[in-house]
Image (cartoon, rainbow, N blue to C red; front, side, top):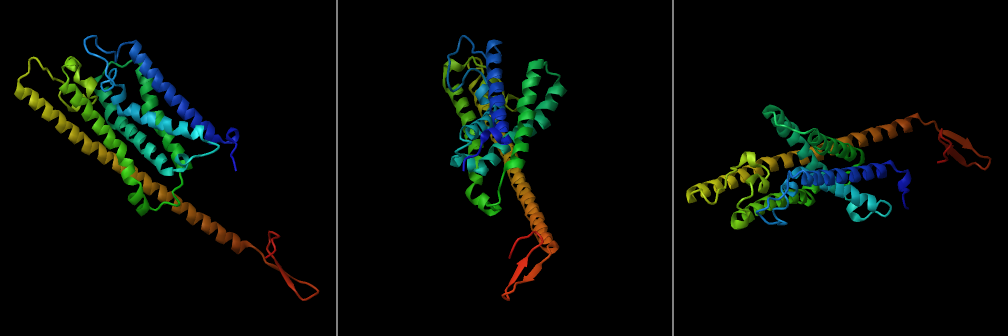
Amino acid sequence: MKRSKWRDKNFYWELLMCSSIFGMLIFVYVEHMVNSHWLRNVDYPFSPVIFQGQFLSFFTFQSNGLVAAYFLIRVIFYDNQIRFCKNKTLLLYVTSYITVTFITYVTVLFPATLANKYETRIIDWIYSLFLHIITPISTITYMFLNIDFSQITVKKYFKNYFLGYLVYPWFYTIYLIFRIFIFLSDDRFSSIPFEIVYPYAPVSSKSFDFGNSSAEDMIGNILYTFFSIFLLFIVVHTLFIIVNISYLFIIRKMERNYEKKHNLSNVENKKNKKTIIIKLKNGEEKTFDSDNTIE
């Protein structure tokens, strides 16, 4: 039976989520291009790998894009849901990704911005708070209100779904390493600031001076960079795993509590029912509950 999307509050919530996130991402990209924050230098070529600056390399934009894409597909196929829409593990995936964005911002990026007194425009604060705070909290709220893991045990999740959750973090790490390899192997990119290629420059060397650095310095910088990527991989993936597993156990705990409460409620209802037995003229007996239901 088809659902009426115009009467379902979830539809409006999903429509609002996908439209607002996509709208914000487009606004951020266009605004940065217009104001030359991420604009390409004139002396290096356009590349789909390096892209025009850092937009595709930041996990913030990618994780928000994944959430928006998830809700967009749900909106498009709301009346006739495809298998993708019914797969609740995907909701857990995207919520875990955006939660990592939220935790990283709250514990690292935001305190660092305040401590170092970076000059931040008001517009930057607005989109930063939206992508790092509003989107994650909204997605987390939606997940807890709509996710259903009653048919998925913890054992089944780890056996069939957990590795699927880690595919995207692995892909993202490989993507960053690929960008660095392209940067190091093509002289046309030698003038690009390294922080444009690798957005997490605070944990890496920013200096790759091909013309003035010695071979030993270059090798040292490269080794340091890849060591920092490996370290970041370990730390961030540990966070990915902790967030996902925590959500899994919280959801299962909530569902067990609901089932327990529901079962207790049914037992109480049965105890409170009054049974009425009526003996008919032909000798038969009819049993009635207090709710007028014939047994």
